[in-house]
Length: 130
Image (cartoon, rainbow, N blue to C red; front, side):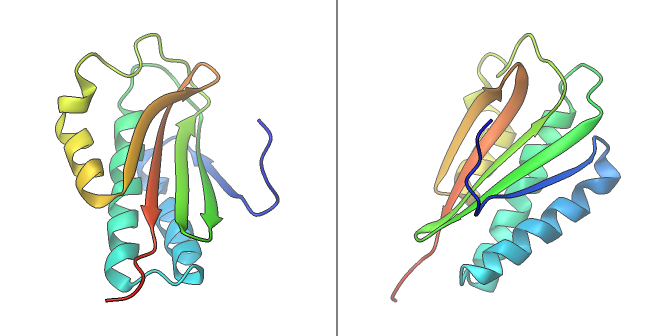
């Protein structure tokens, strides 16, 4: 996968206890893009939800990845593993609690694949003006 030089890619063991490192990384990048504290918290929670859902997919992934792309208008984050998933996204996933939470916290959500691995892409825009 080609990644621009501005991308931040973080990889951790595919276990829930390492998700705090991913939350910290996305929070740090969001702060540099001038997100408000509330927007940073929303993005951290969204990353947590996305990663938890991906880790619940049957299989044996060893690594959980987070690709964070800061842009002028916000941040795009893609969470994925090195595992494979036959049925991704699951049927009616858009109706799940995870999907509803992600849609409420972000400005865009896509359930996709990176290669044969399950992935969740979220977009959070910087709010300008009042």
